[in-house]
Image (cartoon, rainbow, N blue to C red):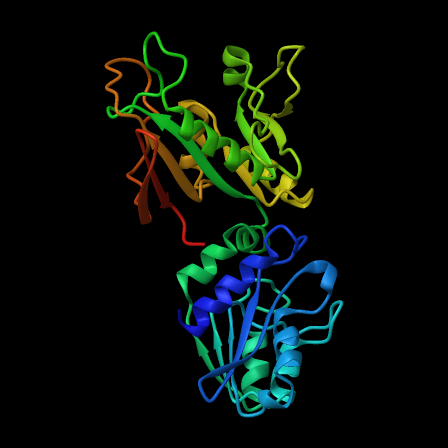
Length: 314
């Protein structure tokens, strides 16, 4: 494992514990030996860089810092990390990704260089993906949108005579996706047709996501979902202002097509069942132009194949 990979691993220790802040991990290396490590947790107050520098002590002088995100350059709950790094005598900083926060966004790198620190910016996809939700929320002022769908091999979203398209393991993964999301949404038509609950069941969930329906009302009286009737972009900005950083979209073809056409889907997760549906709606309608995906990956969940890809770089 490289020193930077170790920094990414350390950053994960803060997942679920950073509030509305990003995951950050840091490693201080001198003469090829790790002398300090740190990661960010909101309640601990200290930033990852500060924790690693404190652990390194005097050994930080002349050392290299590996950090997953650009050090901050402004006063918040703590002084600027960029200044602390330079003051500790770090001679080289390997930074995973720029911080899109307007209060930072390159200023941290500049402060390091002004302090005599040699800076290498990796622009690592792994570092950006680690904070894909936070980066989108901070930079675009809307939630990071993941569209999840279960389909047959011929792209149908229904199988005649069956309730589910995908298998049990895939459905469990969907509940894990819900548990990790701030909000889950479908279209109003899906609510009227299927009365989905959209909660996370049978998995560990520290809290339930907000459950939304986009489209025209009214919803059935028994529905517990929030109805959002405005233009999609405006509704997403309003949700972001309310602290919703991530949205899992589970709607049918109409809603999926609307989000895709508006450029509001960041990531696609497709559960492909080993079945030919033969008839029924496909998971997306007509698009004005093809949409390319990047960073594709594939795995399995029981008998299903799970394909993930990005429609927008995080």
